[in-house]
Length: 180
Image (cartoon, rainbow, N blue to C red; front, top):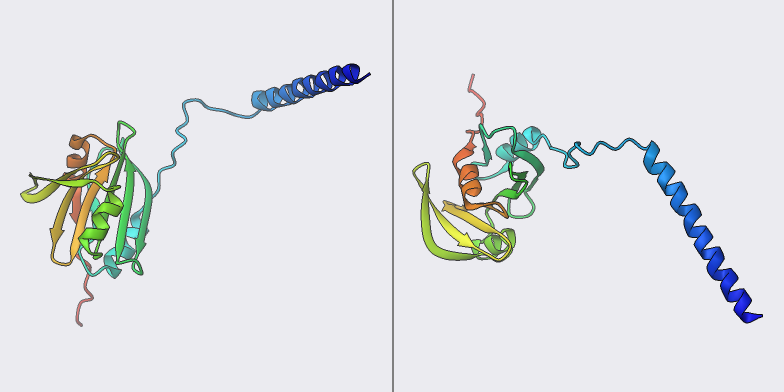
């Protein structure tokens, strides 16, 4: 009797799985699915950029003139976290590139945003400014330190892409109210 019940349980389970599979198949057939659609949604960071530029105690940077094949995917400004500006992108090769700025101590900030990359001791000139080259297991980075702010271009992207982003970075002077 026990052997019969065991076979019945297995048979019922198999029939249930077939029924579930059929339902899932029908749902899949009738749901629109565009294989060419890009699942990554681009974000418009204009409002956050203006807000950060007004609030930050340093010149906030963002890229100008990058090709449309670069997609902004994340943006944030956290004044309460050492004035941290973050702008994340997917480059044309679908690799990650982030622009990070903060007034936080560089010894804490750089390892955090580069996933513990290390200073190679080498530098690179980009638009006449000197950037330090950092290398890591996860991310590589270009790092520039100025009065009171550290700027980092980091990510999984190739070094040429990090350089391309650094070359595109510009800061807009904050519009000052005119005195009437």
